[in-house]
Image 1 (cartoon, one colour):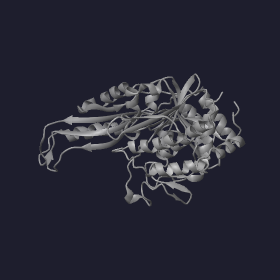
Image 2 (cartoon, one colour):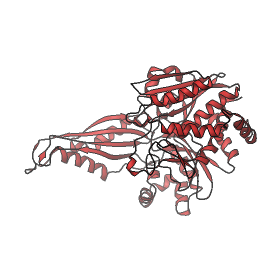
Image 3 (cartoon, helix red, strand yellow):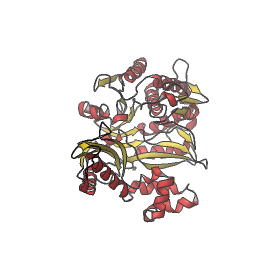
Image 4 (cartoon, one colour):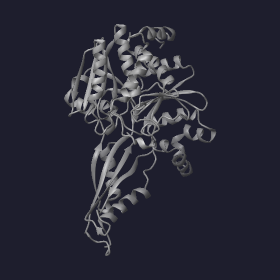
Length: 457
């Protein structure tokens, strides 16, 4: 497949797609700065503020849009460019961002300023930067007036950072027409990177580990702290947690992980490359497993189910043995079995402690195939715009709203053309979140080229 629009023509088109004398790149940088400055920290969210911002842009462009609040202040917005009969494309973003402790930042959390070549502030990477690329591409298609082979839907939603139940989850239940006749979707979850060897690699998320959030609860006889009994609610919880620590989930390899590790092996140092190329065999070696866990914890999380112990509580007073105690687990399971099976296996493992397991949240597993025009366009366009680059289907240890849309049968990819240099600070969910202005500007054209390649005959 060749690019419908050659790179040189694309650059000319982007320069000519102006408003108020600005190029699309200039507009996009300004939009991103303004977007970051809008407080949509979740909790509480207040995503209607982002809806108002995006609505004002659509109104100025003469684009019809719709909005809906799933709860007071929890706004969602969508707009549609109508096209031909091919299954539609959704550009999905979430407008909420995670909290930040300004004490540990060197800039205001919602700065939006540019310093030393970086656009700064919470959301610059997750995901107002990519969301602004969606906006720029959507507007460029509208301004061009080209005939599309399919509908293109811009969708900005609430609450992804807390599970998406006030955003995509709510819209599927209450505004299902948005998703009718949609076949493909682009969301967050992937990314571009410049390796130590100066090679450009684009990870495209095709599936993700399934979040299973659990609460363990125990009940036992209360009493005075000076007279401990053989068991208590607290010791039962501790025993259950210790059982989990002493019995890590066995490693196993699913298809997308095997493909991902094999692709990674090409760029790996010698001490890792052969193991990654033959990961099915490598996981049988306890020494490799120990080394992987220590040196590459994110990759270790791709070869097994995991549970992180994140919260626990017992007595409200130091000298009181409480009648109840609890702990919470953030478990992430590989998408090759249902959550119910995992929970049943976990329940059996800690049954001797008489601790009860309650499910807080559990999603369903799904994997998006790569034999699609959209995936081929990502490969073809990125390789032409970045000669020598590679595209890797990847598995995410985190979760995005794509799990909702995959449940609907929509092929959903996590793709972000912004290229991060090796060792570059991004601050995602951390301090001083930032995105390179140069990389962001380059990505404006790159993302548009991918989408244009899909939506034109």
